[in-house]
Every structure is written in structure tokens, then in C-alpha cells.
Image 1 (cartoon, rainbow, N blue to C red):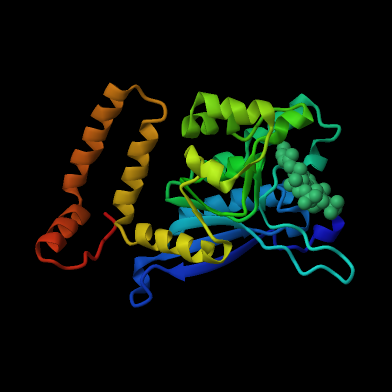
Image 2 (image 1 turned 180 degrees about the vertical axis):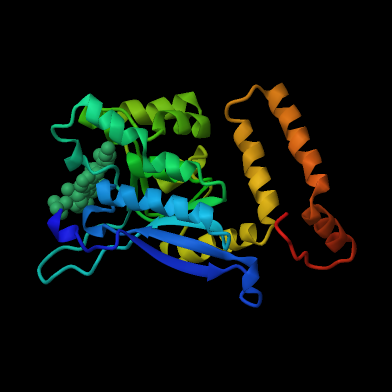
Length: 282
Ligand code: COA
């Protein structure tokens, strides 16, 4: 841990959604930066992710957040380069000698929930390993875009464990009971094409296109009314834990309420006048 004391565990980049009008907000790209350990989530990274989630919620200028993993550093002479990784899981070395009470406390306030609870659009930009807590981190985001060299899996079973960052639940919601259990019971690794084939990820692309494709989608999403985005995410979340009839009546209420917003007038008028809407966010 000592050599990590002064490390920046999260690297940040910002991109304006409309460079000619900075008031339209920005996209925040956060890169987990522990490439020598394949960006495994240790206590330091987890703390930084939780802090970042709080910051994102407070900062009005941030409209969309992208999570990724830092690329491997150039190896010192004679050493092999580490593989690319989004996040290769929770840091397994921190599991040694831990008992249930301690781990329960640590996992009760965790980075996966912190990211899941961000009330703004979130995208996982995956290049390389997304295993265990890394796959769970990707699933805590709303959308997943991966390079074709990425690898997915929930290998906790190999450690005598099960996923503990929401994986059993979010994976089942995302891909269904059978595929979820196949991954969790076998601990096997799958590639991007297979992950795409059953809906674990939204898009697959070449590694050198990944950042651009992710930013394009983030920019498209970020160009909408931030208030409407917020309501849209809330409405879709309702579907995860509500019977369909109840969900539909909740949707009706949220939809109707939008008719009292300035942004609905702005959007409708912009369409009718064939102009670009200039949202107010209310
Ligand atoms: N926790 C802690 N350290 C990890 C890690 C994790 N989840 N995943 C990788 N690392 C570390 C390795 O210990 C190694 O450290 P070292 O160079 O100091 O020895 C470094 O990252 C590189 O990993 P390495 O295993 O040498 O790379 P590889 O290319 O041979 O294998 C993986 C890559 C991803 C297949 C392998 O690292 C792995 O299986 N990781 C664990 C995945 C997992 O079980 N995740 C779920 C955890 S709950």
C-alpha cells in the first residue's frame, strides 16, 4: 500500500457537450488508475469512486459520466507489459483474513451502489478485463460499450465466493436468470461478442474507436434536457422493481408532470419551428 500513497486513483478528463456554448455542460470521464494491478478495486480506489459519485451529483455542469480503466503503463526494461483492463475485480488481497462482520460493513457502503445511485446518465467504457467487481461496476452504469478485446465474467466462485457488489441481482435483471447463473456458477470468462449476443453490453467496437464512440453517445445523451434525462432514468428504474401495471401508472404521472416544464415547451416549439432546442433544465 505504501507505494500507492501519493497515487491519483482516478484520472479525470472533461469534454464540453457543445464547445460553442459551455453552459450546455460537460461529460466527465473518470479512469480508474491502478493499471499495474489491472485496476482492481482496493480500498483507495473504492473511496475515490464513492467521493466522485458525490461530486458528480453536486456539480450541475456534469451531464453524463463515463467510467473506464487506465491503460497499462510502459513496462520497465525487461518486464512484460500488463494487459488492458477495465477493472479485474475487487482487490483479492484485501479479502485475506477478513471475516463476515468486517466485510459486511465494508460492502454495506460500496462503490457499486454509489455509482448505481448517480441520478445522471452513466456509461462504462470497457477495454480489457471486466471481471467480478469490474463486471459489477460496468453493470452499475446505465450503458456499456466495450472494445472487441474485452473479457467478462463473474469468477468469484473460484474464490469460494459469490458476487457481492450487486452482481447476482443486476446481472439477472440485465441478461436473465439462465445466463446469469451460467456465468456465476461456472466463473467462466467470455469475450465481447458473446457478452453482446445476450445483452450484457450495448456495443462492441475496435479498441482505437472506443473512446470516440463512447464520447459520441455521451454527447448525444448530454445534448438533451438534463431534467428530462433525470425523469427518463427514474421512469426506467421503476421497471426494475415494480409490477408492470403499477409501473405504467407511475410512468403516466412522470410523463404528465413533464407537461408543466419549460423544457417541454422548448422542445415542442423547437421541433415545430425546425430549430435546435436550447434547454433550461427545468
Ligand atoms: N485483485 C488483486 N490483484 C489483482 C487482481 C485482483 N482482482 N487481478 C489482477 N491482479 C494483479 C495480479 O495479482 C498481478 O499483480 P503482480 O503483477 O503484482 O503479481 C497483476 O494484477 C497482473 O495480473 P496477472 O494475473 O499477472 O495478469 P494475467 O494476464 O496473467 O491474468 C487475469 C489476468 C485477469 C486473468 C488474472 O489477473 C485474474 O484472474 N485476476 C483475478 C480476477 C478475479 O477473480 N476477479 C474477481 C475478484 S472478486
